[in-house]
Length: 184
Ligand code: HEM
Image 1 (cartoon, rainbow, N blue to C red):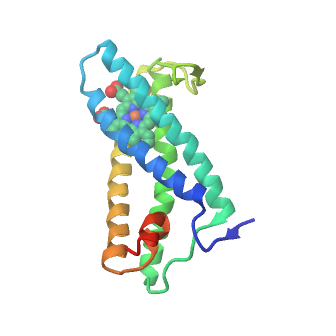
Image 2 (tube, rainbow, N blue to C red; image 1 turned 120 degrees about the vertical axis):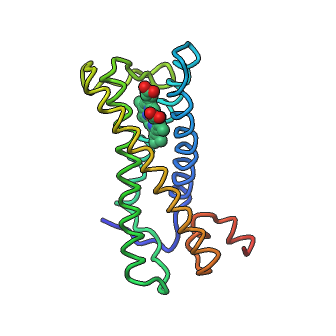
């Protein structure tokens, strides 16, 4: 059952921004730590990265359930058909990537023999056994999906800014209630 909504709920807005912030933390941390020499510091950063990434995965699942239950606010009538289709495709891709990118990180950690222990206390089960070749493949896949994710996030931000500053519609205001209140 899908419930139509005139505006995003507070939960949806919070989920959106928390996931965005965590991706903006996980991505540069991943690039930085990957290039470090092996040390206790590097391993500590690996753990922080995995905790952030697993939190993205958990929130992504909640977000997808939210999206199935609630229909987001309607798009502005001024949007052309191709723009609607592009926005729909982009959102589906983003939903898939916020799920699949962390999943590949989790699988890679299992395949390389480094179990993820969430916040240092909750052991996350390994989904595959230790396998060096698979680990290497998953690392490449994880990297490629992360770069694709960050590129699409960039396009997503550009589109939101275009709607706000050029089309002057309500799309960005729906996700940033502060803009609505301040009349921006
Ligand atoms: C949205 C979530 C995530 C993002 C954006 C992300 C991003 C990245 C990036 C950009 C790198 C560097 C890749 C490279 O330069 O080769 C990386 C590496 C890594 N990620 Fe993630 N990651 C996420 C989730 C996860 C999760 C959930 C795990 C494991 C539970 C994980 C485990 C790792 C590990 C172990 C590496 C280092 C691999 C190595 O250097 O050997 N990541 N990640």
